[in-house]
Amino acid sequence: MPEISCEWGTTTEIIAQYCKEVIGTDISPECIQRARERHPNLHFEVLDGFDVRSALELGKQFTKIYIDISGLSGYRSLLDVISLLIMYATVLRPEVIIIKSGALKHFISKCIAWRKEKA
Ligand SMILES: C[S@@+](CC[C@H](N)C(=O)[O-])C[C@H]1O[C@@H](n2cnc3c(N)ncnc32)[C@H](O)[C@@H]1O
Image 1 (cartoon, rainbow, N blue to C red):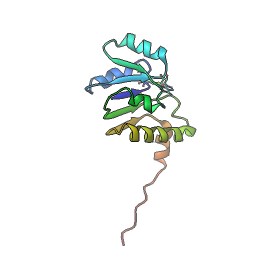
Image 2: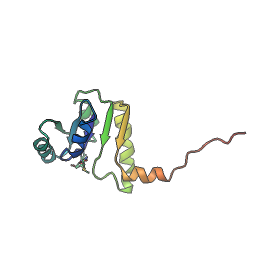
Image 3: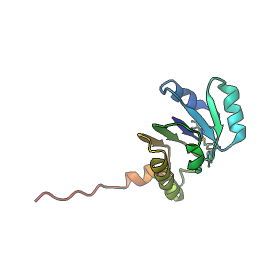
């Protein structure tokens, strides 16, 4: 399982207790260096979360993906969130994607599923 945007690896360490294999990734080399220092037993890589092709090149069959990229909570970021979800779903084809996004949470809270009336 990759954590997209792990910062210093705090959540990566928690995920590692429940997953067979986890890779913490972040766009910031400084964050990854600190994560490696704090959690020398875990695997971390520098990765731009929007570069799904590079995520693919990590060479793993990911069944679960956790995304926590900063900046995905503003209302205007909703399209970024949706495009990220679609990219990861179509390229890596995981069983599940968990994404931390205030924009998506707000949007979904305003949605009502349409159902055809029974005759
Ligand atoms: C809220 S922090 C992540 C916290 C971490 N998931 C945790 O639970 O401790 C957001 C992180 O997103 C990273 N980030 C921002 N833009 C990114 C991008 N395009 N790709 C990957 N990481 C990015 C930042 O470097 C920052 O470390």
